[in-house]
Length: 252
Image 1 (tube, rainbow, N blue to C red):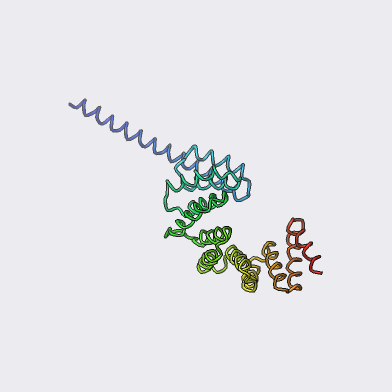
Image 2 (cartoon, rainbow, N blue to C red):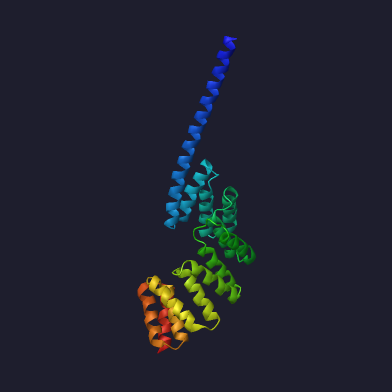
């Protein structure tokens, strides 16, 4: 009887030790995966997408059930314009954490890049409905972009305004709303939005270019010239600067 108890206790000790070792090994793998993911994210921020993908795939082998990692993998493929490979990773991130707003929004972006507008709208709307999503003005702006692309300017305006209601200084929404107003031949309203956007982000040549076009459309050629010159100053060797240079010649 005592011998049986000895073997029972030994078995329990062995099982506890085995579980503890497995737990320690799993924790070590997760930490290694997180460090590798962090490196991949650094490459993503530096726009080194191939290097990012290499590190993120290493991390996936260590811990495939990390929703942050799956979203990062989706982004790496997305930025490489491999949308069919990005989509499964965004979906896996949502399988792991269904209320993960960034993955929902990014999934909408991937479908939008493929011009699958209905699917893009579906996931953008779902993203806006996630209560804990900290930046709902992103999917709202993206909805504005989609409706602008399909020329439903009434809905486009509505979604941009909702986005600006949440973040009045969100430059992407300001530009999108301005483009919508131009499409609706509401150039003065577009100019006001673009002037605000330029004040918020004065180093963005595309905003100056759009503003120059708006000034030109309304007949304010002096301001148009200044805005085109800002484009050339900010991005001197770019195709946009070439377009600005040509537009200035046409103002004369």
